[in-house]
View (tube, rainbow, N blue to C red):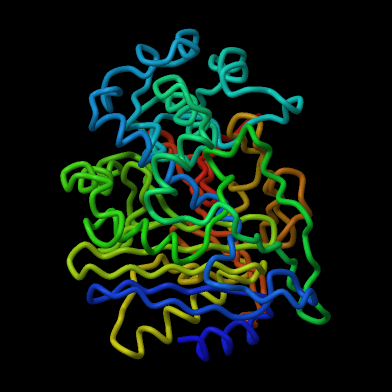
Length: 420
């Protein structure tokens, strides 16, 4: 496994990576490269990598433990469990965990030191962008709310709760060294990124750092296996991976086949992906086979490494569930001009402009990129397919069922509505 990981890391320009495989009751790990490019500090089995959004299943598991203990309820209005929400829209914990509560995609920038309680008390009324329970729309603020609920019930800061209730029982080394993220360029050395941009306020959504071994043990715990087997009862674990998007007008397109309470679904597998500043992490688990696969990578091309790893594992007979990122039958010059416009999800905006038969997408003020659009209005951004290329944007335009007009766009799971 180490030779394979080293080969793939070199191919994709990733300075350091870890892989962990739980199979047939055994945990196998491998590491390669450096914590920071040129540092001489080797990645070890304990080196902690930024998880980005792969933090969310940990926060969801905290909530599930509180539900199992009778301290929280999945289906009663969350405002009845958390006072700061009384001025806001009505939604449930189950909806928040499955990104179906209709909440905004991102939080606005706030002064340093803002607590989650103060943030929620001030901004609860501004969070609703869709009717609860009608569509899937990926939301980071939702997980800040879950983190706040954990704090209210346990009396602990979210970071204290996740370490004492989850990471410590799973054997996490809190003193482990940390890997830096890196911007990988087609030519030249990877550029280290000294700090992750996630503010402490957003830690419940994207702030954890752990190693691939921890991820695999965490995934195995959700299967009732390994050192964390006693962490969750089987019914609680099973309920977390039940798809909540079936029957919705808009599902989890571009991210997964479906979504549960903190877990994304990929056929028979469940898991989650995470991206930080120059870092990627991936976790998959299969309840029928008891298999878990985890990868951490400290390069912006880590998702390319993951795709290559899954391809090589498939050659050995281990087909790991994933969501295709480039499987869209699209071509230049085929984009309907009526898709052009300004779209928004709370304060998160994107613009689509028609130019010479093409559409160009600008997300959150970034430079425009060309879209390849299919007949069903799904799209991706072009890529040269090289081993060090960035991952494409995936999305789709959606029509108003009543009028047929294009009125929404879904990008990386976030559903934006056309604005005049």
